[in-house]
Image (cartoon, rainbow, N blue to C red; front, side, top):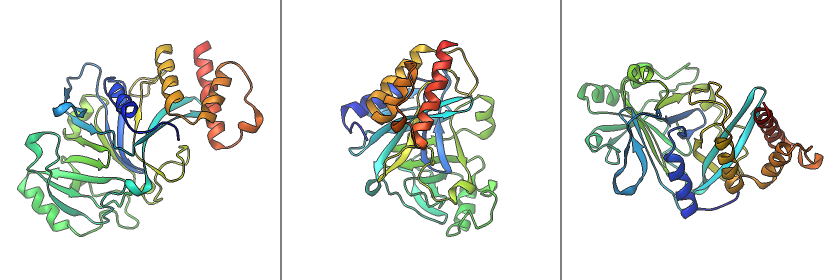
Length: 303
């Protein structure tokens, strides 16, 4: 893995935070909280020059943890490509509570908004290795309901999904060693406002007990605590096709040069230059995916 913690990591995080087209995610494989915002959506910086933002729908706070290593990569598909920066910690440094039952944690003293710091925080007990997936409420009736469920696994074997009554209309928070995402607007308001902060929970993926997708070229010993997805040159925040943006393409190329796997970056450059990749270097899942991504980009550039 290239690069290291320090000013370069801090600079990467702050630069991406300044771009409303960048989408952030904290959590694990099968459960995560996403922070996204519209280009014209009001956003307030955090106190004390902390890295993060808050909007009326959610908030993000991250930090350049001393052991944090970004790892940039592209994944090629039949109809395009994705671009990702995985925010990784060493396996020994990423552990969170790893609770497997609903657990009351007390007041959320680290809440991003001061008015939320007296509300009660409950860990959903998903057992994620590098994140605590939580809900938060100040409503006495909801607190009593959650306390009655405390100590139980909410994802029992064979359950199709977590009981919606448990999390409906509550603040949803994912906490990691590198920061937190909070989603605190009601579901209806989030949907009406378009793409923005949201949570996803996929029991079928959680049961695989993976730390990341098999398509992500994360080096052994490193665990993603989250990801950021910089502005895509050919798709908008909702995934819809847009005219190719050469500036965005070049910008992520620079991120890859700094934080990507040099071998995969070399394959990308060769394809973009119209060359055939060196066969000995073009084998393997990650190399093939990088080549597919670069070929899709070359087609978009020439198209």
